[in-house]
Amino acid sequence: MQSSSLFTKTNLSDFPSEPDISDPGPDMGNYPNSDYTLRQGRIYVESAPFGYQTSTQQNPAAYNFPFLLRYGLTDDVELRLAGNDLTSTDDFPNSKTGVAPLILDTKVRLWNEQMDVFIPAAALEVYLQTNWGSKEFRGGVQPSMNLNLNFPSTDVTNIEMTLGYTGVQAEVELNQFSHRWAIEQQLTDPLELFVHGYYLPPVGSLDFSKVIGTGGFYKPSEQTILFTSFNAATDRNSPPFSTQFGIAFAF
Image (cartoon, rainbow, N blue to C red; front, side, top):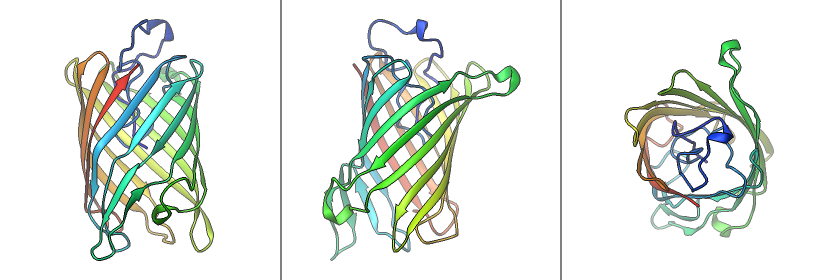
């Protein structure tokens, strides 16, 4: 799951009565997850109709259609349903097509930033990858936890970071740490660009998978944001190239 943008407001009293995708912004787009939660009763539908990554030594190239559904249970608690949805691996003659497992997710906003004393805004995210998907892509039930941090530098520059801890079922049950980050710069009212990356250990390996990339958000209307990213590996464990194109709607 990928994160929000600078199209955000930290004071809930600033939220408009009508849906505005920039308040608090989509949670797909770049790698870290946002600390922001939706206002009570607000719904976001986020999806990347085209996602692709090239093959690695361990995994074939794959196309997928990730999505994220978000609902504001309260102003500080968000219920979420996510997944890679339709997935196809390019591994002829052993190519596979099916539906990736669903992910049940909850995000709770903990506190606002106090940058005068170097305290970032924070949210706790707890989620569970289920076995509800095509058997070809089931990886067992995998519980995870994220600490989502936000370091606003200026009105137009922002740093986001996600520290994650995931239980993975392989030949033995493993616990993995991950780190995702993004530096975001708002150029104009509708356009924001970012650089982002992640550090993630592949299952069964002590070597970290390292990826860096760039992308952007574009807001064509009050209820819609488009996003894309282009990413490259800096090691042999990661896909040499990956990309996605997506859209988010506010209701």
